[in-house]
Image 1 (cartoon, each protein chain N blue to C red):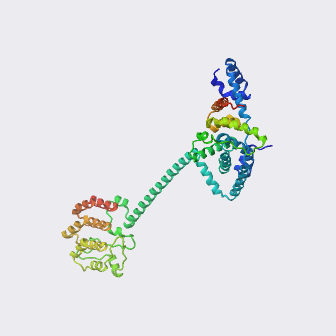
Image 2: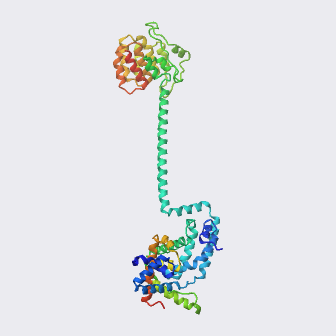
Image 3: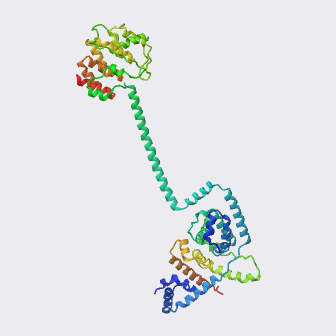
Length: 184
Length: 318
């Protein structure tokens, strides 16, 4: 039987830091993709992912026993992202301008990845057209599959408002996809 | 049914995750607004488009970096002392607004408690100083003078009583009443005789009295001085012992106008508590009614409570 994220995190809090490896295995790809879909920068996503786990080790005692790990985890992820742009004295909304001309590079150039690469590029192109806040909530809800109640806690808004915002973000994405004929 | 009401549930509807009531409401809305169906289909396509997007692969060094970091953290954790962990926690708590409020409240309470404790300590200290001063004052004054007794007895205490059991360094000077002595012939007190035998080797309390000039005191008691000298000792001498001795010997001349005038004239200017008491006693003993005026003048000064009581009693007895 697989241990829950919360259970593992509690063990980490109790000093069993090596248990964090399990959480890393479960979340690092999703976290990396969350950053990639919101910043469109591979190196930056890599660094930020690393920083999140560093921060978890540093602030492991801030995790509350009855908290949902995923919410706490993405809260740290958002804070790391905000701190990064704050450090560079950049507004997070300026991401679109910063990375608009940056091409996403893929490690593998094999044939089997060609289709995957193509689809990702299309999606990034569509997401890139969204404002950061809409992009973030859409990625967290539909791609990271976070529950509405967890998102409500994360964004400090009501669950109903989360639903509305996700719907509006999706609607905007729909318009972008239709406008640029990306849905091939 | 309004669009705003179904809007929050549209994505769940597309995923087939809505409850029956909501599904019914959305379907009802679609029935009434068929043009919305195309909108919903487009939304479903977009959702599918998002969902089918694969996850990008991470770079291999991310994993390596993480495990290197984890290994380092494990090493650090072992070497980390409990104090450092505590400090980290405090730093962490400090970032929480509730902790800041709690800390501010705690700090305020501590400050108030400290202030209260310090103020109480100061009050206690002041009280101790006051008690000490009072004890010192009592030490300077004769111990056997009971102010209550002075009041109830309505009789001024004699200078003999004042000096009995007083500071051991000051020997009592016992006087003889003028009525008991042979009139016209100076009488030596018993103490004076003792002093003669001991060659006047008394030790004087330095704090209250000038060093005792034994020769002069001896002269006084040996009656080797005349009346003018006695008066001179009363007036122009700073040595309380000599003044007291002279005052004692002057009792036999109390009937003389000159002596009474001189002693009474000095009374308001006497600062020494013992001499004040002795002089008041002298006036009462010799029943000098003219003493009322200088006694009243003495009362205008700042007096020790015992002296004040004695003076008031003396005035009453006149």
